Structure formats: structure tokens, C-alpha cells
Length: 306
Image (tube, rainbow, N blue to C red; front, side, top):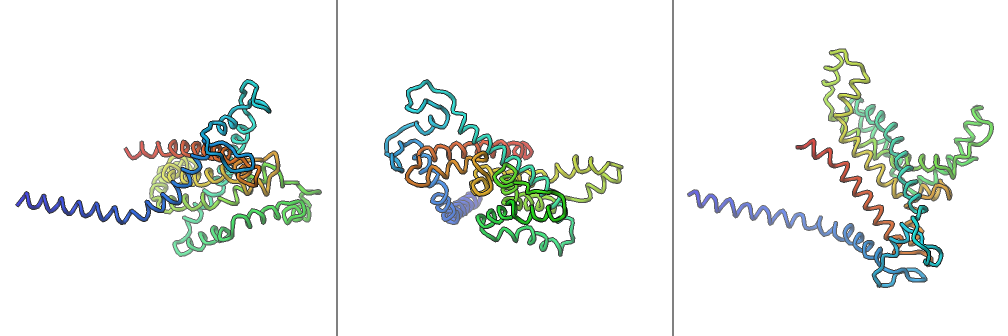
């Protein structure tokens, strides 16, 4: 009897594994076609040779990575020196994405907390109001932001009308304009994860701390923030990662001094003068940075689970 039960359980377990495999197959195929295949193509292209009029020559080369990190002179016959131009563009991208993430967190956390504290029947309306502008294409929203910030735009005209400024601020083509564009583009990605975390927060913890005469700042710092930390981390990642590779905001709202890595990669694949292997190499370097960031952000979560 025991042997029969064991055999039956084994058959049932095998059937379950087979059914799970078939159910997951469409997801794996989709991920393979839409994610792994393009990444594999980019990885292969990054090790190929540039074709003079665009495209690639199927000859293995490390020239794209060498071009990114080293400067060997106009004709390539000088001793290698560190290429600070592209490294500077990467650093500017990290700084811009970090500033946009901090700004989104400063605005997004109070917004998410406010929405989560509303009565249950009002929360859907507030979430709807936060997300409704994002039903419009990102390009249209970025152009609208440029129209808002330009010298003759509603922002400058409104400030001059009430007497706060006497001449336009000149925000467009500055780092501030790029940060505002990134902030506006990805703010809901900060609000929604934090809102989901705050909504699950047990308010009895704050009430107990208040009963023990804990100041509000202490309650926020010692109780609320640690409890909703997964939502904050998720929101920061969801804002920082797309901001790091963005090219619409730098192209439309910034200038030459606000050039970011996304714009650099876009230029390498645009027109016949592009350098596809270099663009692919820059993309793989960016992807590596993002993966390192995700691994580092996941480590505290794994420690917490243990």
C-alpha cells in the first residue's frame, strides 16, 4: 500500500511538473524572442567591426570597447590614454538620473502616503489622477514640457505676470530642464510602488509609537520608512534605470552640455555615419551597470528573507 501511494504521488508530481512546463512555455518563448534575442544580437554586434557607410563587418574586434575607454589619437598611432569624454557622458547620465530619482522620491513619497491615507473609495480616483497624463505618448509629453518651460511658455509668462521675475528664466537647454523632464516622465513609477507598500502598512504601529510619546519624525524614520522600504527601493529602481538610458528628455529639453548616454547610443544607430559596434558596446556597458545596480539592491532583500 505504501509503495503504491508513493508511486501514485510520484506520477502526480511528474504530471504537475510537465503541466507547469507547458504552461510556462509561452512566457519563456516570448522572453526569448523579445528580450534575450535582441540582447544577444547587441552583444554580438559589440564585438564586430564597423562598416564605413554604416552597419557591421563580420570580423571579430574589441575596437568598440577600446574606443569607449581609450583615446589613441586621430590615426590610432598614439599611446593609449583614458577617454574621459564618454566616461564623462556616463557620469553625467548617472548624475542626471540620480537627481531625477531623488526629486521623484521627495515628491512621490508624500503623494503616495497622502493617497494611501484617503478613504478606500477615494483612492482609485487619486491613482487615476496621477496616471492619466501617462496615457499620452512619452514624446508628446516631453514636447509639451518643452513648450511649458520655453522662454515664451506659460511658466515664464505666468511668473512675469505676477511680478516674480522681470525676464524669462531660460530653463530650456539646461540640466534643470532635463531633470524636470525625467522627473515628469517617470514620477508615477515612484508613486505607485510606494503607494502599494504604504497601503499595506499597519497604522497600529504608528499609533502604538505615538502612545509611547515618540515624535513624528522618529515614527517616520524608525517605523514607517523601514516598513515601506521595499516600495521605496522598487520606485527608485523604476525611475533611475529608465532615466539613465533616456534620450528624449536630453534631446528635446537639453543641449550639448546635457548629452546623456541614451543620446550617444541613439546617434550611433542613426543614419549612415553611425558606428553600430560602438553603439552596441555602449549599450552593453550600460546594461552591465544596470545589472550591477539591481544585484546590489536585491542583496539586502535576500538578507532580510534569511
